[in-house]
Image (cartoon, rainbow, N blue to C red):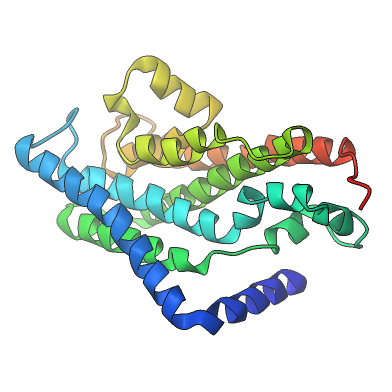
Amino acid sequence: MKLYFKYVSILFRSQMEYRTSFILLSIGQFFVPFLVFVSMYFLFQRFNTIGGWSLYEVALCYGIIHMGFSISECFVRGFDSFSSLVVNGDFDRILVRPRSTILQVLGSKFEFTRIGRLSQAVIVFVYALSNLNIDWNFNKILTLIFMLASGIFIFSGIYMIGATLCFWTIEGLEVINIFTDGGREISQYPLSIYNKWIKRFFTFVIPFGTVNYLPLMFVLDKVEGNSLIYMFTPLLGMLFIIPCILLWGFGVRHYKSTGS
């Protein structure tokens, strides 16, 4: 971990060398998703509820998924841009270093300008909580933490899958964006408003439903019976990272050097 934080420190200082650019990019990262939320707000001005969910309930869902996405996009950016390491032959150097390839790829790139997107998501999150009448207890607070962690793990896993495919395709595949950007857009609303096949796919295949929909029902007291099961569903979502790591290891073992 000491080496990882060294990577963070070096890249943060390098990005802060161009502070004006950093600030402007961060502001841009703030307003792009903000406009998405504004459109959501006006949608609810026209329709008071969508599928039985109010604006503030959906805003809570929105805040959680965007916080998870922005954090993973910042700290797992190395996997998202991994194709450049393969194309340039830089991954060969990573392989001969006495450190984990995952750690080195993670430390190859950070996008600290995503603080703009993160701050916007936090504002929406606080806005939602301040307007919801939630009967808080320790379990619900812990569930929110689990939800955020689950989102980070799932997005990170998808980035890792996209990077692994580069061992065979060389260039990154845009189809991965269907599951990162597309998954984010779908998951900013509760999955119950979609068709059954979409709900099942994003619950059992790529488990975004464990980030917000299922645990959110527990936080908002929308379930009856043994509701504690819903509390721990984000932990199942975190397990998504395990096959992603295994797939990455498989790809590394089958990587053919560029010879550089």
